[in-house]
Length: 114
Length: 112
Image 1: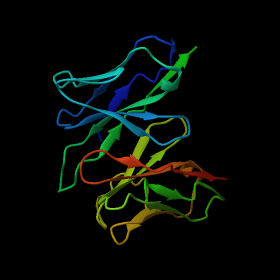
Image 2 (image 1 turned 120 degrees about the horizontal axis):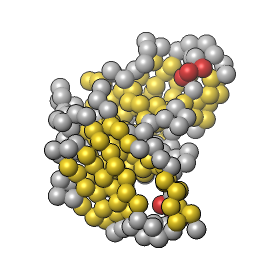
Image 3 (image 1 turned 30 degrees about the vertical axis):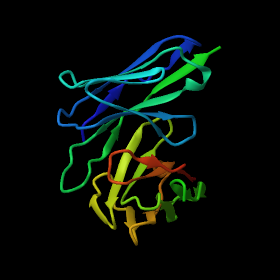
């Protein structure tokens, strides 16, 4: 099974800072890309999908570079509530009629301080 | 229900005992996934169901692990003869066939 690599952090930043997370994936045939957020002792929750053209949702911007097999997440004006682990997620190519499984990175921990 | 539910939320068992973990997916979701997350680690894929069939069992770590799904809904993950290294959070997710998966709160398993 191919890997999804992330810097584990932790990233310790002050409120209001801009922080960027990077992720690389090894399977060039991967089809879909996501960022999930996981709070301590909670389940992962979808933060946003990542599209080739780049996409933005409020303070969050995601970018995909297929040629470099690289995904990024930018958080602007960080809030205390942004403190969590951010998981980079890639789908395996569909096979045998299945929809393709999600391959999770180990996550990057963010801690936003007052 | 409104979301994916799992039971029990916590399970403490003795080494060598069998355990059953249950997952109730979101109503109407045809795809169901089991993952495992050990302390400080990423999510490890275990098994995937499409309807009642499991086209991908490749993630099951040993033959002590098995899972079934009946009626295209509830799934049970069974671990036989538990070992201490089985201690982890077991997460279930369901999907309607598009790619987004919705996770349940997990079952925290501790094998003593």
